Image (tube, rainbow, N blue to C red; front, side, top):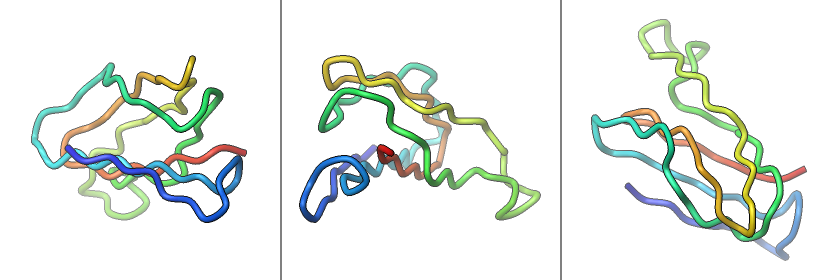
Length: 85
């Protein structure tokens, strides 16, 4: 598992959180610190069936980070990218 925060100037529409699960184990309620509270939208999910019909197509909901901490669905062998509007 690896997660990191990327930004240029910082703030909404600039901060990006990338989370990658390298394991074959999915997590349904994974706690992760986000740079700020609020809704973090899924911008990319590597299990999307649009990339390949062989992919799982697991739905990953947006994350509501309360006090900067959010719980996310993290499928096995998946990369996710989150940002705020």
